[in-house]
Image 1 (cartoon, rainbow over the protein chains, first blue to last red):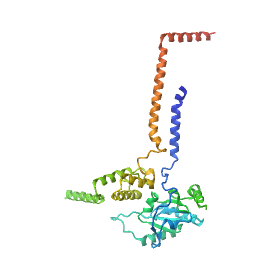
Image 2: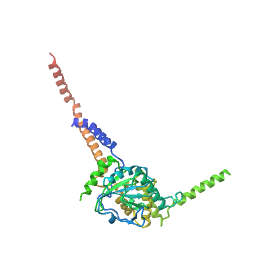
Image 3: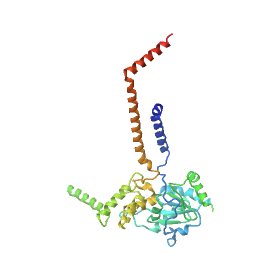
Image 4: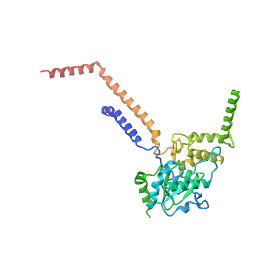
Length: 190
Length: 153
């Protein structure tokens, strides 16, 4: 009994040290997503380049795809465009969800779709175009329903329209290899 | 003249601030809005609530909270709406479940452990106090002397 009490502080200290050590290697941005294994929320968003076309969840079912939240204003999103384009060439389906910035009526010019289309076309021409198409989330309503906290973020949506993964941050070769590719392959199986 | 200018500048800033104030149907709604925006956590800048943060997502969540309150939703409905989208993470008061149970249990267990150690030490002390009995001490002393002598060549 004495021995146990003698070593108790050391054991407590070691346990605390291990706990804090594991904290050093954890990613504070990593958090459980509430959308996993749930169907896509209901939405009706216009196509960014052809505003007459309206996309709904039903129109997106049939094949597993990546839903990539991005914007030309976001440097990290622009940096990942090149690698995403490579993925598209390897046969990965990628749909863009364009995350438009809120506008301050006192400082910003009113929203102009033609200007945005030009900016996007230029950016995709420079960096590569990984997208089959882009949906314009002007009010960020679908983004809010998906639990998006910023750009870039990427979801894996399976053929039945169920969200299977939610990645916060950019996609680079390492993230794709270790985290997303296995899930994409798993949910692409018929 | 300078004082007048200063006064004018101050008034200008006050009227600018006034534009930011949101209209509510009643005082209750305003209080609910203030309470909720302080309790909801910004998912982007993680140690700020959505009232303090100006991240895009915090602005959107503030707006949504405002909209839901104006629609007549109560506190729990707004919280459910946000938790459904951003998880338990988004509320500064975590719910009691099997993952968070330890937050409440750990302090109680530590306190119990401390009390148990205290009681153990106290009983041991009183047990040791029996040794101060002169008769016991004498026999112990005799034993020691005996052992010492037997070791001598």
